[in-house]
Amino acid sequence: MMRILHHTETENCDNSIQFPSYFIAKDYEHTAKYSKFGSSGMRGLANREITPQLALNFGLAVGSIYSNVIIGHDPRVSSEMLESAVVAGLLSAGSEVVKLGMAPTPTLALASHDFDCGIMITASHNPAQYNGMKIFKKGMSFDTKHQEEIEDVLNKERFRYASWEKTGSLGVMENALKKHSETILKNTKSASLNIVLDCGCGAGSALTPYVLREMGCHVITLNSQPDGHFPGRNPEPDEENLSHLKSVVKATGADLGIANDGDADRMMAVDNQGRFVAGDKMLAFFAVREAKRAIAVPVDSSRVIDDVLKGIKISRTKVGDVYISEELNKIEGDFGGEPSGAWIFPRISYCPDGILAAAKLVEMLEEEGNFSTLLDAIPEYPMKRGAFPCQDKKIAMIRITEELEKLGRINALDGVRVDLEEGWILVRPSGTEPKIRITVESKNECAGLYKVAEEIVKGAIA
Ligand code: MG
Image 1 (cartoon, protein in one colour):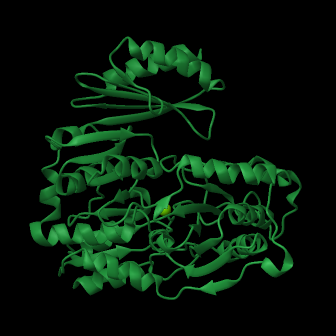
Image 2 (cartoon, helix red, strand yellow; image 1 turned 120 degrees about the vertical axis):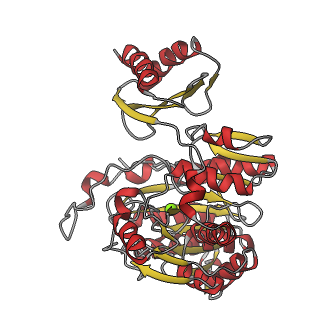
């Protein structure tokens, strides 16, 4: 059955898996009946779980509700196939459709302001054999209510087929990348840093280097040709996948390294010493500089943020950039982000934008100087994560909540988090696997606190 992914959940998938060149879809014939959106849309193995049939029905469902749709895709090998099927569904339902072509997700999000909705064909940071669909409305990911509306039409197959003379027409938008780059450049100052940029052969391969060069920087590019096989590295910009970037930054003496994910809505960085900048540190770095009044961060982010921001309201949300955007909109926040590399600058856009984030980072460093010195000024607290197999997550979580309540005040927004004097414990049921996950952070050492959490979870699943 198709898996519903949430942004921070690391995919347990192997990029080296080899599939036969054809496939009999017998085991997957009911996939469309069980389709459902997660916080990151719909994702799965291309042509097996995310089939053209499913994409066609998805297009029919969206077209049954929205009459004016823009669609774009990342460079994945299966993206054009899926886009064609979605477009056929939209046209069949009578929608007017405009194609953006291959573009970053934030470009599509920006363009969606002029349409009823925008569809992006992408599997974001997942390996090459995956693909999926994500929907946007007025520059933001669909909220839960709008997702459920589509889901309902899709699962009940209540499609609105247009009569033959009312089937939709198809157009092309040519200036979306230009509009996106202009928006970023208008909102950032010029800079003259030396940058090594790893686009990961993703959708940002043209736009990110263009924007940084237009700002005045000298840019050395790695993996900057779009390629749906992602031959250079896995699309997820985590430390493991950025070893080449780290060594080139060091070898060239660059001021920093920048990396995007497959659809360029995420950005991660490497400092001038070639050190990977951890997500929580990057979050604190941006937040200190952007926060004026209020910010939004997920419930699993470090307490460093509370310690470096004084007098700023910090809203903690469920894990997933959709929830950060929703909250920022509600509280009229200045900045939001997730340690996974999704950074939101709401004065410019409510969609995480890996190109804008790169430009903002460069602008800050141009003004303030040495990246590693600035990073070293931000504290870092030890964090430990673990996962425990659990078949009945619901029952286990009830028991775990009872135990955690005895320790202190809990926040049950997404899993259960309890904040204590020395640190915090978060216990969350996995959204995709029969597992319960623990995250523990402490200002000194976290082994003791982890042991407490581990005993509670083990006791609950026994
Ligand atoms: Mg992404």
